[in-house]
Image (cartoon, rainbow, N blue to C red; front, side):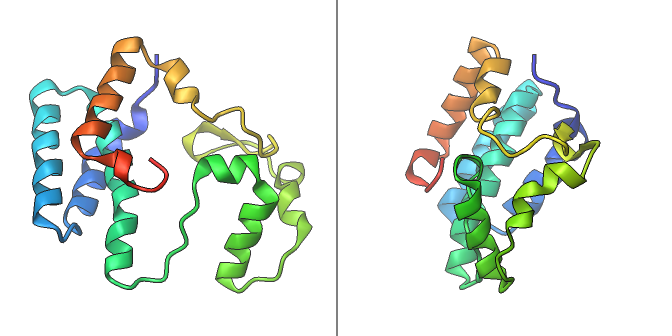
Length: 156
């Protein structure tokens, strides 16, 4: 079973912060209707899904507003860390340094999201959520991805 402590504490605030920045009225209505389903059920899997989806959607809003953003997807970062981290450093105007790939040798402890800082970057966590959820919960996530049209967004 998936631990949802973070979503219990911060989920609603994260959702509403992003929701307020959506400029497209149809998209806003779709997210609002989906959120009403969460309100009825109080199913935290729905809220966690909506937070992830609305955060992903915000890339579209940032681009509409000509904000200079770099899209980095977790799956790309862990499968090609040198390439992706190099893109991030270049975007930030920071010179490449291979030492960034050795973070696990100098850091330790458990960080945000229960990340083990001493573990090197790897693909072990990709789609791990599907293994930690019940079949019904995975269907709930997929249902809400479909409701908000996330299949049309890059990376979702």
